[in-house]
Image 1 (cartoon, each protein chain N blue to C red):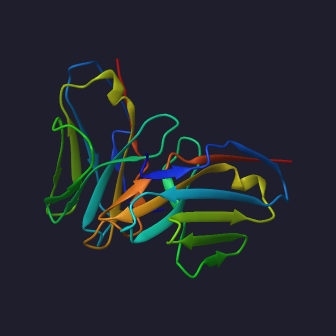
Image 2 (tube, chains in turn orange, cyan):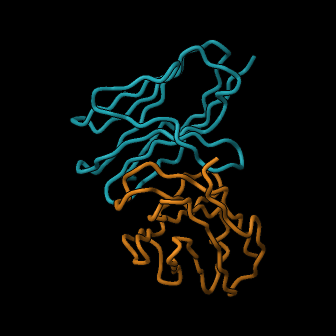
Length: 114
Length: 107
């Protein structure tokens, strides 16, 4: 498998709450990207981190924020949860500096907002 | 217009059939192209990269036409295990995914 892990696997929150999702990094892969995948849709790019700095962002509001740590693991934080935030959240590692290389995905975290 | 558009599907084909998926992208500066496969309730996994010269991996053939901003995937001799959603992916600084095309191969 990819060696990328995510936690938790499933999560249920209520509207207005905050959530933190976590992603480990495959050794040597220093770029991490986060995606949101709603049911029946393709993954939508949220943002990307390279060496602990945000290195690109998709069309998501500021209440979606992230961190990357020195060991290249990463967090996705979502504040003020809305019902439409219910989705599968995927993180992906890639070995290079850019975001155009093969992405190795973790199994995802399924978030349900009630 | 969406950045990456795919055939809406679904495609339901018998075993042994040949099936083709199409994809168009809007950003002419895109530099990398991929097909990913996603099984139900699983993460996407790389199927193959797509090169301008076209490339083949066993029963799978991918083509890229930069002038038309068009990518294709051909699957020959379909197997039951090919049943999945196929995602077209285009890269330019980051990766943009199509909505996916669902394929069901039936006995």
